[in-house]
Image (tube, rainbow, N blue to C red; front, side, top):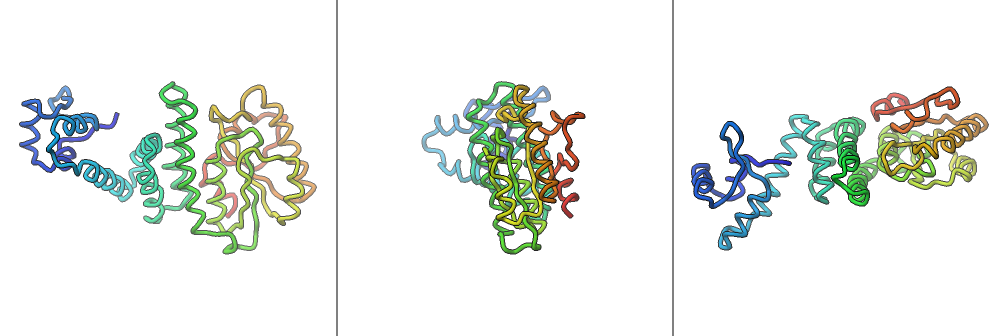
Length: 294
C-alpha cells in the first residue's frame, strides 16, 4: 500500500502541518500511526475527509494529480528506477493513463536510452504486475489491461524513429504463435528502430508458415523472435514446449537457407536451453539486444 506523508496531505488539503495534526487528533481526518508515532495517510483517508466535509475545497483531484506528477519527475531526476518501476506498475493497474505516459515519456525526454528505460523501469514494472497475478491479487483480465496500457505508451517511442529514417537494414519482430503478450516484442522493436532499423512487427499469433514469403518480400536482414515466461504465454507451458522447440528448429533451418541471422529474446528461452534446441544468439535484457545489433 502506498502511503502519503503529513506534508503530502497538508499540500493536498491546502492547510499547514499544525492544522493537519490538530485535525488528526480531533478526528476530522483519520490516519495510521507508525510504531514511532509518525502519521501516515492513505488515499482512502483523504477521500473519507472530503466525504465528511462537503464544504471543503474540491480541488482534491487536481492537487493529488500535481503531487503525483511532481513525485514522478523527482524520481526521474534522481534516477530512482525502483520507485519509477513501482509507480508504473501501480499506475497501469489503476488505469492511470497520464501517469504511465509521464513516467515513460519523462524518462525518454530526460535522455535515458530506450534500452535502459525498458531494463530498469518497464520490465521490473511488468514483473511486479505478473507477481501480483501469481499471488492472486490480480485477475488475468486485469493484468492484460495493465500491460496493454504500458504497451500502448511504449509504442509511442517508435514515433521518434519512424520507418524510412533508417540505416538501410530491415528487421522482422515476431511473437511465437502461442505467445500472447506483446510488450516484449514491442520493446524489441523500439530498440531496433532507435538503432536505425526499419522494423516490421507481427505482434501476437503470427503464423510461422508464411515466414519465408515475408522475408523475401520485405528484404529482411534480421529476424527477432520473442518468448516471454508469463502465465498467459502458452508457448512456454509444458505441453507446448516440444511444439516451440520444433518451431525453433524450423526457424533455424530457414535462417540458414535465407542467410538471415535470427535473435531469440525473452525469459521464456530459459525453458528451452538444452541440447535439443540451438539458440545461438539470445538476449534477456534490452541493453544486451542493443549490444548484439550495434
